[in-house]
Length: 283
Image 1 (cartoon, rainbow, N blue to C red):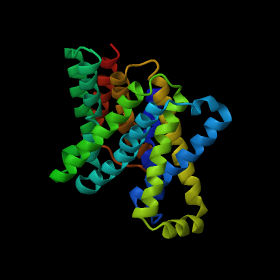
Image 2: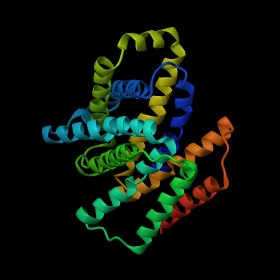
Image 3: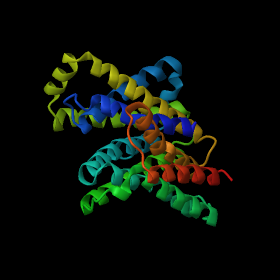
């Protein structure tokens, strides 16, 4: 389930390319996706299992933090990091996430930090770096790096929060409430920080954009979070987080196959290293 979610996350670039000339900036596109996700997930829970709306008040606060920090905060900081240091560097920075989750698990969940785990983390991080093309990237913006590190923290916060604070709930509940609060944040951003009239005009003038956003939301938000949250019932969060790093490999494969993007020898070596780290993680 985690690997399928990672492949779906990796398809994100397909939709970004399709929406690149839409006239919407990255935060506007992400906010629209979050709003659509909140609406669709409300409908899904209502039609399939209304009991999944049940949540204790104290856990509702945790879900709000996960949605605001772990989803909306991640998207905002990741997008800003990309603007400052480029996609390659930002992509590697967020894949410090498994290291953060593993350190958390060792401190608070009593997991042992074995030599195999350290090797897996090193191989995985270097592999993600080589896949992303960071070796040819010359970015050195300190602020962008700091914001990228914060994005990794937000990413880890989401995984840890769902696995701990919302552990007792069904996958639908764990998916729904963080998405709801992230959607509210997205709506507030569009209303306060953007030109809602311009966005409405763009979407109405080209209904195809609405369809693309809809499919994007289903593939990269609803299915991915449902699969990942469901997997946390079977896997510990550090193992699941590491498996999710198959995402950049999937993204590169999509780029090569669908858009005929070039991949150099470092990218190929990086893919092999990620595969090796995932296999070692399962031993």
